[in-house]
Image (tube, rainbow, N blue to C red; front, side, top):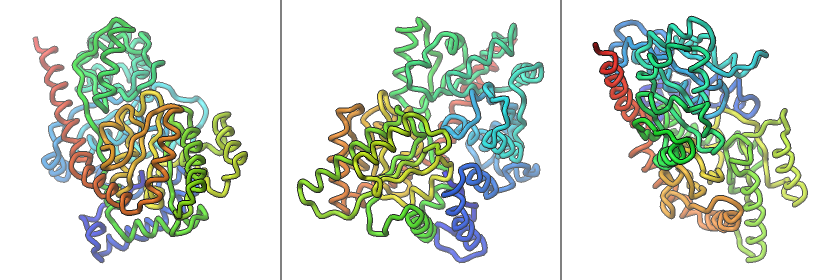
Amino acid sequence: MAKAPSSSGTAAAGGRGPAHHRTRLLLVLLVAVAVSASTAGFLLRGALRDPCDAHGDSASLTAAAEGSPLGFMRSKLVLLVSHELSLSGGPLLLMELAFLLRHVGSQVVWITNQRSEETNDVTYSLEHKMLNHGVQVLPARGQEAADTARKADLVILNTAVAGKWLDPVLKDHVPEVLPKILWWIHEMRGHYFKLEYVKHLPFVAGAMIDSHTTAEYWKSRTSDRLKIQMPQTYVVHLGNSKELMEVAEDNVARRVLREHIRESLGVQSEDIVFAIINSVSRGKGQDLFLQAFYQSLQLIQQKKLKVPTMHAVVVGSDMNAQTKFETQLRDFVVKNGIHDRVHFVNKTLAVAPYLAAIDVLVQNSQARGECFGRITIEAMAFKLPVLGTAAGGTTEIVLDGSTGLLHPAGKEGVTPLAKNIVRLASHAEQRVSMGKKGYDRVKERFMEHHMAERIAAVLKDVLKKSREHTRP
């Protein structure tokens, strides 16, 4: 998600102050960055953030704490343990929480459990972004990590796989630390249900999960398959950042981004663009999306419908890796002669330019769907209708027939998705109406302050339990 600088609302309100003009200039620069390099895009995003977030003085931290539902976390020591540090949703979401905590004066320490020994530009950039925000980064192994866990007021394990960090590092101190652990789980895939990952799960202070659907799934699977019980489980829906909302609500910024991205893709202003924005993998359903898109073109031709030229954009490729799955996607495009209608874009954190440039978001995650799907609420902030699978957290975000249209997961969903593509391509007024309703839904329940309030309630409860457990 792309970040624009805070400017006390002038950008969204259409003001003409210095901050407003700076925002516009930086957004134009963001376009060039977003098209070319994901790491650079992230560095720009970090550069645009309010520097007070990193090293504010005592007065500013006090003011921030008093104005935030997380204010009670001031001076608390929080250890964040992430399974990995990458451009995927879990680590980025944990980083976002780290910055929210730093903003109110928490002492935040980060540990990445699984890290490549080789120099990695993404890892290097993300770690330095955290350091610039005052987050301390420690090696995953060693006495310092164990000591920090024992001293911390709160330990957050991020993803189920992060549980593998406990025994090798804490050793005999695991029982001492468990009562102050909040386990933040984002996974829906069956292969995460391994006892070696989550054997300590019943004994932590609580589990935090991004959707009710995923929480119910974890409750049943741990009981039936692993014969263990979930701890108290909190469902916390996510929210859009203030910075993303600034861009989404700035008509001039959106127009600038839309024009530049469409020009880079070779898409005309009057064309209709359907996009899927996820890391390219079979579980995200890019193959079924392209099949549905191809079917939609055939339906339009068969029914002789008059619709604007349609394009499909796949954001989340890895041009360097060229995996077998991505090769299959490109082969499908060439084989069916739609290479002039399908565009592949390398993975990037700067998704705001693409959200500004497209007309409809497709959220096609397969099997049990997304645990939540942050990109869905980001698209709705840009007043985009969503075509999503009727699975996972998407069903808690998208109102079928109101803010978008849902279709079944799996191969049986290809034809319904194709028909939904044709429906929205044929009815501009419906796209506008659904997009407006989606935006209203975001404003009602999926903003950063909503997420902060929900997380704050969880952290208060976990801290209370921890104190009660350690009380003599």
